[in-house]
Length: 413
Image 1 (cartoon, rainbow, N blue to C red):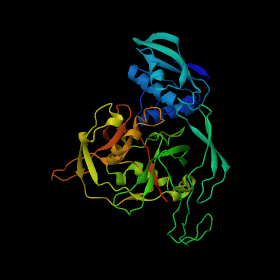
Image 2: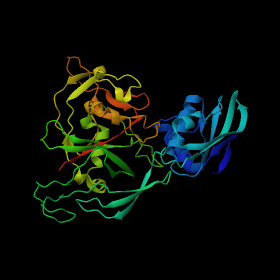
Image 3: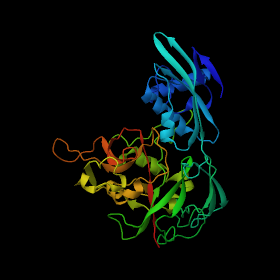
Image 4: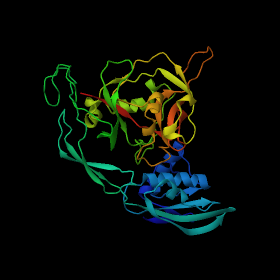
């Protein structure tokens, strides 16, 4: 990696310039205005300076840099501490797949009464397939049809693990409503199942959401949705927490939060899922095979499960309030608090690395709040699964540190 001296400080140049959350100046920060300023400077000079003013800022910066690393090659970058010497303990603590961690002091100097220490920090990704969190690349082996997913080879670009899967079938599509499938031209009468089969707990499917491919595991082979027919479904839950910065690019930082308030029906995260189940994105993901199920929110809660209890979380720690039911049907959705408690053992079974954008994931249930007249009102807190604390509890809807862990249903034959 090329480096250049900027005002007496060594700075990294190149791809690291556009990593999310970085800013120039005397402090590391995550606000969008500073990030935009960084990008402007990078376009003008091709140089970037990483500076931190304490342990907390350094930890957040390192988590961002390491979690953004997407290759097996060695990564190196430069960090300057203001009245602080950068340390790398957080890398070993939070990223078990990172090995050969180095921290070399390059320069130490004083300026305007401040002490500055510049360090070159590096790490490598351990090719440990069991410890790896996996970032999948897909190669089609056999093309699928509307009712058969075909075969694909998944290769992890971090550890090199390869496996062959049968992806989810695309399902029939009839956008022009002529009762003929737009893809296979088979006649449709509206009564036949879109995808037939019997799914068992533990079965895995792959689906593409946005830029990446994710694995979904069946966590319930006898799922039923409240307020719908008596059809039984298989419930699939994403194995990965999708980071809240999933749509960021090299030129723009974009964080998906819960929304303006805790009403899931109008939330940003529901819209994000909805957009990926429609149009061309829906075709690539195979949304036509997913069954619309009732996900209308009809309860709110107060309270939080005890820290660290995880799969042993006690339902009695949460107080339930019944709301007027919403009419809402989605093909892909977030779990509710009730479902989180039902599948509490699966909640903590993820393959995600913790990052500033995936400390946990949202549920679709609001925190109960009363208005001046004593009735329920939508407020600023929704429930989330906190992987860091091991709790199910409230979080501010504007909190960008929580990601998404979507689910969907397939009909059981």
